[in-house]
Image 1 (cartoon, one colour):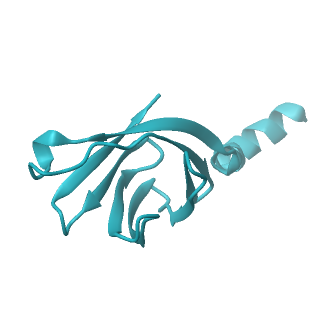
Image 2 (cartoon, rainbow, N blue to C red; image 1 turned 45 degrees about the vertical axis):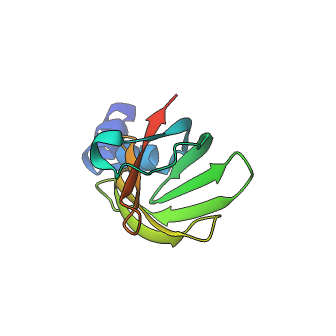
Amino acid sequence: MKSFLLVTAVMFGVFPAYAQLQAQTWKAQITLNKDRSAGSCDNSFGTITLTLAGNELTQVSSTGSTFKFPVKDDGSVDHTYRNSSGGTVRIVGNARTKDLEIVNDRTGCRFKYVPM
C-alpha cells in the first residue's frame, strides 16, 4: 500500500510541488558586468541575501532594504522597481538557476548577482 501511495504521489507531482514550496536562501555579491555596461558605472555594491519561496523572490540588502519580486513557474524574473537610492532598475534572469542581473536602463549599467 505504501508503494502505491508513493508512486501515486510522484505521478501526480506532489513531491515536485512540495519541493517548489521549500524556501531557498543564498547570499550573492553584486558585481558590475563590465562587458555589458557603460564606462561610467559605479561598482560599490556589497552582498545581498536572496530567498526564493514558491513564486516569490525576496531580496534583502546589507542595510536591511527589502524587495519582493514575482517569479514565473519556469523561474524567470523581469520586474522593474525603485531601488533604495530612488532609481528605477530592473531585476532580470532566472531565480531558480540563480542567474540574475540588475539593469539600469537610464545609465546603461548592468550588475550580476554572483552567488557566494
